[in-house]
Image (cartoon, rainbow, N blue to C red):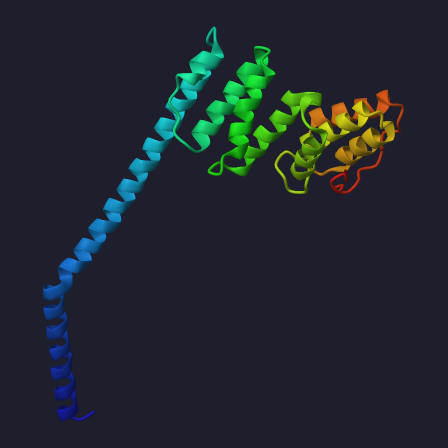
Length: 225
């Protein structure tokens, strides 16, 4: 490289550095603002999460206190719960309190209200529907009951096996012994089987004179009505 080329390169580099320095002086504050925004946003999110957790704990404490009260239903009714999951949880617990107090019709009102809510998780709305079926018993319209249980027993539903257990109970009440046994066997073959359900399904099969499966099966399809 000639001395001329070297000189030109040094001048070019110096000009580049001068431009960079000038740009930094002009726009450097933008980077500072970005950094402050990131730090501030992180702090805000952390505060919001902590606030939400604190409020959730406080709400849970209120529910537990109400349940332990002399009149749980009245105590629960006094708890403020805005729409969404909190309202659904409170209403579910009010339904349980009413059922415990021997007021199934009042319990159904709470369960139906939760089941009809559009702004709650599927797990809560379907739990309310299942509780409504159990609370209503044979007073629920059979066609409606069967439709609700069929929907709750579809693969992937959060309370599939519990809904199938109710389907078995319906079959048994209708005198369909074989149908009840078949559903109980499907429950035993499901991958999501819990110890409690396993015991109840096994006891049902034995009580009806059926043969309990000895080999593990694959996940069974939902029983057809």
